[in-house]
Image 1 (cartoon, one colour):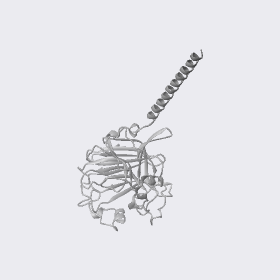
Image 2 (cartoon, rainbow, N blue to C red):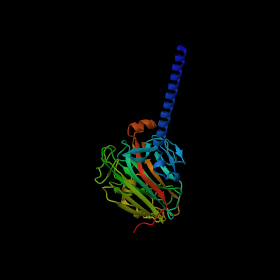
Image 3 (cartoon, rainbow, N blue to C red):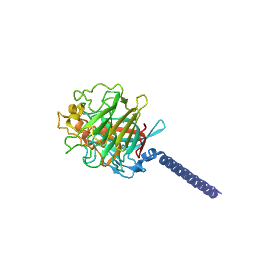
Image 4 (cartoon, rainbow, N blue to C red):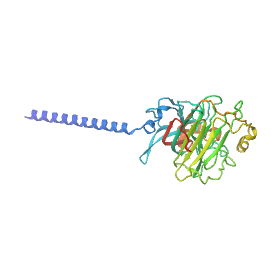
Amino acid sequence: MKNSLFTFVVLLTLFACKNETKSTETKAETKSTITKKEIKAPSDVIPFMDKWKILLGDGTKSEDLLGFQKDGFFYVETENETDWVVYKTPNSGITSKTSSNTRTELGEKKHWIPEEGGKLTGTLKVKHVSTTGDATKSSAFSVVVGQIHSGEGHENEPLKIYYKKFPGHTKGSVFWNYEINTKGDNAGRWDYSTAVWGNDFSKVGKDATTAPNEPVDGIALDEEFSYEVNVYKGIMYLTFTSEGHETVTFTKSLIKTDFPTKASIPQQIIDSYLSRRKVSEEREIAYDGEINYFKQGAYNQANVKTGSKIYEGDIAKQYENGSYAEVWFKTATVGEATAPKK
């Protein structure tokens, strides 16, 4: 009788342990499944990622962005039940061979000439720009959030959309730059800057540590704004919108220059560049017939050349100490050009 009772207890214990193990495994599997479902890639939020490749601020490259993400550079954040694609990059890291500025930025796979054109849109907010830099440098404390880049010739940039905010200011500026397709060699190239909200590229401090006056009509960090870049039959149509701000539009030809002679070079350029180097005219046909493509994300304009702290290139230390740019996109599209509304 005692042996039978002992055997029964042993069997009951083994059965209970087996059930407990099975229950624990089921819970673990369920938790794992939930975790996998909760993790989203940027391509789950903005589905046009198949049309792009990317370069990250640590030098990582990828041409297959479906399901691709990398913590600390290119990933998804959810805020107030809205998913955002995050582009984050340090002041100093590994970048392209033609630039000293780091980027976590998409590059369009499709190339086009201005006469063919294309359209790029984005709704975003800038979460952070470098808090270190030289206030007399035009590109300090700024990030480029959208571009048109030339793929041949001088490989200049007919469009760069900037956000810039000086330390201590609440409001920053949104402006766009047009880089000339320089006549002759590229030594005399320059950017002409146009303000959207706040100031343009040329507004700088009187010395390295003194910022200019804060823009009255500027955009704060974490404040949403949208842009549309529509290149239609060689003409670039820009539209900028933000709640609580006036909608602003611009038109600029990419196939016929506004700057064919020395006399046509704007005073902004003479004031900003001529004391440092020569400035050239643009070729008559500007970017006519030249291959271009869109870029979008965070192209950090703050680096050692603008006096920013880079902590010997240590990315973790740069992130800890404010030496980085971070841009969040909620929506974006890329596609064919459309006839402008009259």
